[in-house]
Length: 90
Image (cartoon, rainbow, N blue to C red; front, top):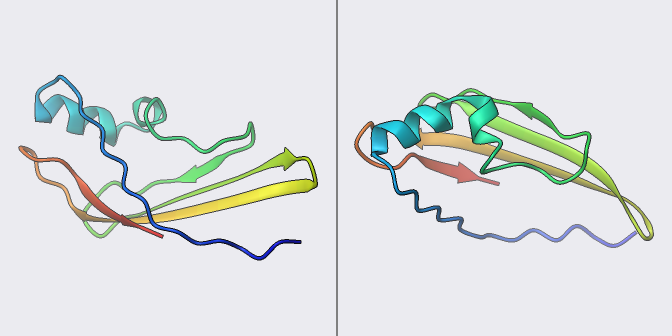
């Protein structure tokens, strides 16, 4: 088994819509999955979309040498109605 590789990246999504509409869509799990989702057919999500809330996503899927497991945890640092939401992920 290869050791885990941890990295940092930034996702920037530009949407041609009013900030209030984007925030409302992001707050709805079903609509958020259109933008952000884990690979694989067995992904699981736990979401708490509020300041200080924690979102966790887990997934596992087959790869040539076994199974790949992913987990992502994000903490909502700021949610402003007129500006984009900010989250820290690790």
